[in-house]
Image (cartoon, rainbow, N blue to C red):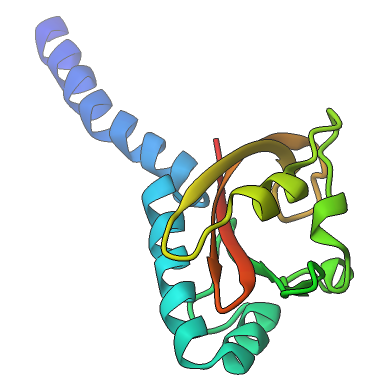
Length: 153
């Protein structure tokens, strides 16, 4: 009887523990998903920048998924596409994290047409909790715009 109970408990734990791990991460995007979203941004920006910018602002067109979202600054350096309307119009190069890291200036400095770069900084996840967490954004330049997608670690 004891042996049967123990074997049942072990079997159930083997089923439940992986499911709990998936449930904990189901709401967060991965590095691979962020990179794939940025690839879609590049293709879309090359085809129709006006439409892409509008879709990013609305969180449509596959440019917003859980805590992943695209963003772009125009050729003049101001944010033109972001799902948070309060970010529109801000000078990207002035964006700093809670530790004072000028991540926006780094975006502008390292973004190059046809290449993807990474920038690490602290930034709050979308939602009510505004506690900054470690974020990595993939950035590139496309049609004069600096665009990116970040994921949270």
